[in-house]
Length: 68
View 1 (cartoon, rainbow, N blue to C red):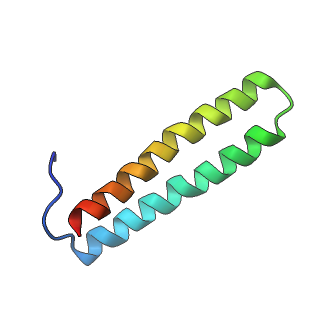
View 2 (cartoon, rainbow, N blue to C red; view 1 turned 45 degrees about the vertical axis):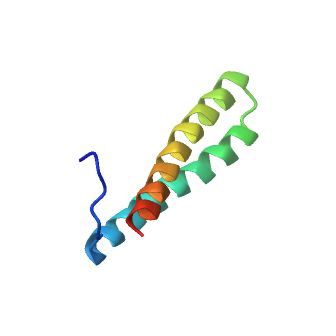
């Protein structure tokens, strides 16, 4: 689907909220693990995973903004 529907159902909204929470939680964990990692390679890996999931969170927010 390339265009967000004019109206998002409550079921869709709940699913989007769940997806956002999954990705946001993973972002927080990766940020924490990146800071705790003593190995630079592992720290960079967690940072990269954080960035990928942060982008997904931003996309989900954009979908909700477009639907308003």
